[in-house]
Length: 236
Length: 292
Image 1 (cartoon, each protein chain N blue to C red):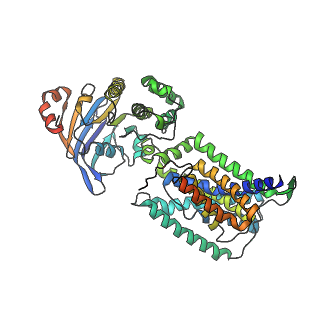
Image 2 (tube, rainbow over the protein chains, first blue to last red):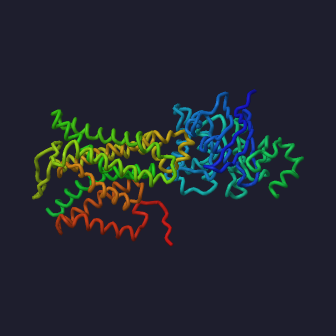
């Protein structure tokens, strides 16, 4: 089966600062792919470039059989979803309004309602709080809204930037349990994490990012046997 | 009692006009972080468009009113398409767009002066006549102003909270990048916002000129008030701008009644200073203020 996302020689950065040197990256039709590595080496930059928030300096990106269009809105409409770092919720809107914004580019309202039920089933807490403004939520609940809003797009690929950032260990476990369930439904997910131990249980493919390029790539089994490399990079 | 009715009537009339001007400005700033310095000229253009429709084409008042509002929308759209959209991604957008819109404003005002001259025309788009509430004479035009402002602002409020198009505007205002990630084409959203702000300004211009006269610089004073109202309300708060406009209209009417017309604006500005010392982010502002 063809890859869902295939990237060759991607170079990108902020203004004049080159961050991604040359990234080759591909994602299959399902399962969780994890991008790990220390902070400040281009993990978020990669996701933002793929999502279209940052311009591509050079390189090729093919998604679902066609080159990616220009601009974040068009890419979102093609089914490429990014759950950005720090949630970036619409703070003045309620939980339900936030979730419905996730389905902005969908027109079949019946199917959207169906997805909303799925999201509420996955995160029952959000159903309880659906009329509450998102700024009054706890950190864990906000993360759930962020991920739920990503799910509402019903896209083909969901990229999540540091889902564990700033959360208590117990909440992180809940979030990853949910991600595992989403992936079990046959959806493709890309997760960025600083520390691989959190994603090790659910992800099936790993890329270690260092200095704007992948320094190591492998499966879960390979990650276990090459733990020395990982330790060197992450200082764990 | 009559005094109270008098203040209420003229205060609400003033407040309704201020609200029409301020709400559009607040929406523009809230969504795009753009201070439209040409907002006052948008009002003037609406007023002159309505005037010309009646004077040169003999159209009925309702048509003239619609033409004035439409002209405001068109000038808003042109502002986005010819100027603003090219500046959106520039560094220091807020400053650039401030200077650019100020320039466009001056240009348009001079253009109006060239075409119509400086003669203060009276606005034909108004309803004449008065009726009495108790001992107070109320013009039908005040009623028209109140009704039109209420209808337009309610329509905007409905659109912003109940329609998908409005949700896109609010989402863009709250978090532009996140809105783009949801598939909102923010450049189109900005165009829509400037059209709406232009239409509201056009309507405000027609109403304002109906109480005084038409002149190329007629938009300046109302624009200053609209800016002041936005600052008092808290920059970008649309609901706040509406409420602050009504409140300041009533305040100004009371001052005018008890102290005289010329004290209206200065005392209103004094009140604004007091409010900003007490609440630097404005009455309804959510922006955090850092004081050193």
